[in-house]
Length: 195
Image 1 (spheres, rainbow, N blue to C red):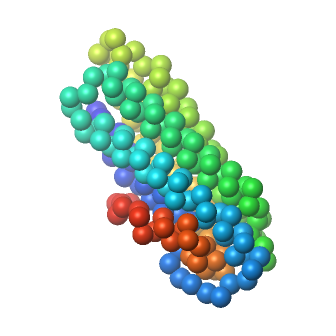
Image 2: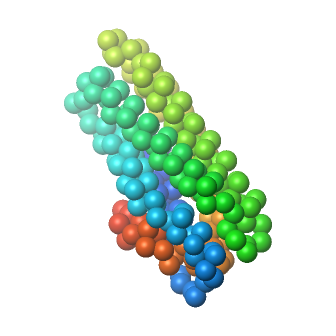
């Protein structure tokens, strides 16, 4: 049943790489300043998110863990995912709309909304994991299976957040982000993921 939890993560780590471009341009100073605000915290956010996904995947494959160990690992990972996506939403919200970008405010609000919703969904999964009965193996297994199914259903929500981030980072915005050290670090340090 834990393999389902690992499978549910297959597209999740893709969000780790969002807000990282690969092209460069001269850019403009206002947009560059905006991109710096967005990119500076990206490496720390990505580490937190990547580590959480790795912990869930490892726990899902580990057949020797006790229910208490699984609960502790999954709970911490879901909390880290909730905090990581909330932090990303907060940074984009604080940075405001990318200056001089057509439709930038709408794209920025959409990204903040979708990342916040994803954060809330992971916080809800943490609560559900915390409430699992680790003293009863059968009940724990059933509860973990339910959590795994819910996480799998979150795939469309993760994809929606990824799409919102990609929409935010088009054109001049993408070029400005690509020039920032934080986004460059995230690109070079991120592991390869399957989508």
